[in-house]
Image (cartoon, rainbow, N blue to C red):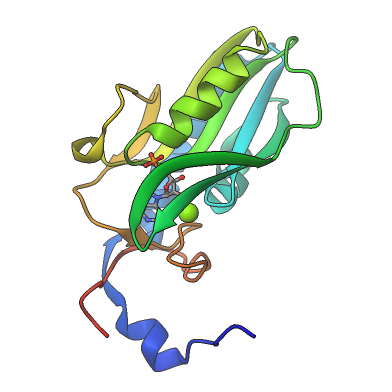
Length: 186
Ligand code: IMP
Ligand code: MG
C-alpha cells in the first residue's frame, strides 16, 4: 500500500508561492479572450494533455466565450525523481478524428520540450486544419529540443514547480497556486 504523506511533511516541501491564484486568473482571462477572438466561427478542439493540464484546461475553457470542443490525451513522461528521462508514452488517446478541427494543445509546462514535441508530431500526422500550442508555464532554460508554444502564460526559471495541476510524485496537483518545490527538505 502507498504511504500517505502527513500534512507537516506535505507542507514542508512547499518552498514558496511563485504564481498566485489571482495572477493565474488574470492571464487566463486574457488568453481566453484572445482564443475566442481568433477562433470564433471555426470548429476547434482544445486537447488537454493529462494529467498536468486538467486544472488549467478547466479554467481556460471557461474563459473562452465561443463554441469549442474538448478532448483529452494522456502523455506520461517518465521521471527519475524530478528529472525527465525523455521517454514518453501515450497512455490514453483522443476519441475522435481531428482532421475537421483546428486543434489547440493545452499543456501545463514545457520543460525539455520532449513531451510536447512527441505529442505535437503525432497530432500533426493526423492532419488537423491547424495546430497551435498553449502552455501555462514555460521553462526555456531547460529546453533540449527546439520547440516554442504559440501562447505561453508564464515564463519561469529552472525551478521544479508544483500546484495547479502539476505534481511531484502525484501529490500537490490540488494546490490552487504554483509553488516552488523544496527538494532539500527531507
Ligand atoms: P518535458 O518533456 O521535459 O518538456 O516535460 C514535460 C512534462 O514534465 C510536463 O507535462 C510535466 O508533467 C512534467 N514537468 C516538467 N517540469 C515540471 C515541474 O517543474 N513540475 C512538475 N512537473 C513538471
Ligand atoms: Mg507530471
